[in-house]
Length: 389
Ligand code: PMP
Ligand code: GLN
Image (cartoon, rainbow, N blue to C red; front, side, top):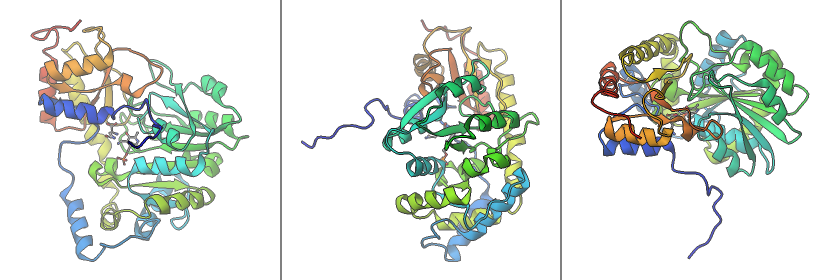
């Protein structure tokens, strides 16, 4: 029998896989995994068909089709006031998750420490472990999930090689301000620490807040790597297409890994997206659209024992069930799925430090009818459905 030593003895099956399977098993309404249950824009689908018919069916250039990189350069300049050269500073990737991994594999050597904020998207920690780095989860402030700069400072050592920031933040919906980005810069300006910013929810931002990217900060330009996902921008998570923006010195190194782990990204989709996003409304309308859904779910749950936490961006919201049950989060999520027929993600699956606060994450990127149906079931908590012990 072949023997090997697992690099990931403590890494469970992804909570998203686990909860989606449970949802299917109990025919629950799935507000767990982050994907929309409404169709994407057929216009973009048509664009892909057109690109395929036009012959874009062989390998794309390794860094991506230039027309798309040019579009992204213009967009970044318009939104953040910084020019990134499409030739040397923008790279198209097969999704954001692989982009995150590529950047980690590019810069992290065995023993290097990578700081990220807890709670966190679940791919950061195993990606760092895969390349021999040391992942360190620095807790966000509780209960507003803002950055704790003083705490972060205590974790920065000569071994720190990278900080991963995610704004708007999954799973809490918190965001960072320009002042915080400048504080962060003050902490790392005399180091060689790379700042990798996961901005996949950049266009899902509510209540007239603005998304603040480190790309907008000239002082952070030479050390920032920014990660994006078209899956989130255009409601096609299954397409797994994204991109990386970074200064040319960093990009040159990132492309050495990218060309050997992916080489290139789905060709026709790139052409289609480049044509589609010529009209910025295709992604700018997302915030208003999703804010209505966030508000619909909150309103529909007003008479339930679930209490929403504030959310500034992303398509997730944490709800507290502390008034209803004392069960730990994972047990509660499993119970809720089975007994109420609604699936959510327990916060505990995405955190190392927070322990149990009776919080569950719901994804509101769902049809209005799905949200209404889920809310009707959740309003039965405390009525026909009694609290579990
Ligand atoms: N980062 C965050 C914070 C996410 O929530 C997700 C999941 N959608 C990703 C990255 C991955 O994006 P993609 O599906 O493009 O790999
Ligand atoms: N990002 C999505 C979420 O947080 C899911 C990604 C995945 O399934 N791996 O729900």
